[in-house]
Image (tube, rainbow, N blue to C red):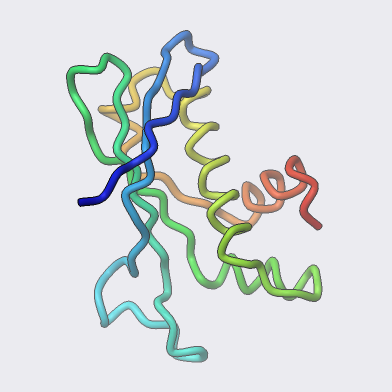
Length: 126
């Protein structure tokens, strides 16, 4: 039995979200491989989220391998798994702050190079 740590975040829209990390998996199945590295082209991070303690729904955040590689190329080192998770979690928080209806419009989120760079910089990761 897995015990999950329920966390809370108060978004700037006034909603108080509760969430927990479900897991990470390759997105798109085996056909979605990066041909250069033979790694999954996109990682999908899944969180279960609620804002009313009644209805819980999944939020998927997609982190493309090419974005991680571009960051590593521009900074001269690879991102650790913990740093990737931190950037994904910052993307989740940004959605909590910006999206009025997470359940309807915030269920699938992307991390692009600019948001990765901004998230990691705000955390002091260079």
